Image (cartoon, rainbow, N blue to C red):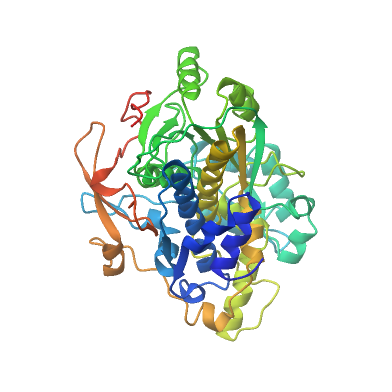
Length: 498
């Protein structure tokens, strides 16, 4: 794959069977290589994936209405969108807490390797501490975790964590990852794939739509971070997105508030027969079913892609996994930070940064993460792109469709885009603004005001705007849209189609 945003977008656009002529409507501006401080082409990944999400919506709109329009994406705005959770405020204040649990992170192991643990959810935190035989008390610190981790070899701990359904990965270089069976299972797999999974008549078209995805109903059963951002993108494009979470699962308010913008939110417990029937009823009238449950989790409950295609012919089912659909790790849980660590990014970024500083790369080099959750955000926009592409196919040929994206597959794609020379990536690449209240002027210029909807205390939010600018149908966001701020702000019903 080529390293420019236009060529990267072209490769993926053609891979899902969309008309090549539409690519002339996609425009990129700004310097992608210096848009953020990294040795990876994250500016290219951000512009290409965000541009594809926008252009696919424009294509769907054109098929429905005959209206043609352009899409433009600025490189700096795009990489700021790739860190959007950092920039929002509620009632003029930055949200309390943060993305990471206080013991999450990278630890040195007995064999001088490294392990990254992900403990943001309480049950994941408890599971990791149980393996380390550490009581979760108020006095427990990260130093306790560090001492216990030094009694383990890196891969042994990774294996033990996976056997208990917990989230930890050993740090590998690119060369080590390339020899791993999971990496080999991903070879040749595109970062977003479409497959026809059932028959259905061609979708009826609309003649008058204010927004590209207007009248499209999306069930969003996803969590942290890629799935929710994909749903948020569809909402900004005009879809009626209903976010469904369980009242019995832990929330992550720091992320939930920002990733639910534009959606309506409700809660259903799928182990409850009444709530399960409500979800079945909603699915019968949906156009898109987006989910990021653990592998096989929804299929066990009767909501697998083929089950849904029978229930609702013409449905687009979109699924996200960490590691892909084939290979020995396909059923493992995972998050962006873990995939970065396992698949070589943390080693490669650290090596490039040391080269920039004029330091010798050594065997005990500290890992360096990418400056944002780039795999999550790229996966989010590629999910939205795949969903829109599948909806286009429902117009041109009918059928029910499945869209698949994995974080590891997206990482493989980002890696394929090539690298930025360290002196450019770290010397000229722009760091992110500091998180401030009121926001940094750069963030303030790109943000807009939202007001709480669906009940509650009428709070006000600011959040960064969509980076994909459509020339004739601006994004549905800010005061024109929803800001639920809570996970149970609405009833589990669809809005009337308009």
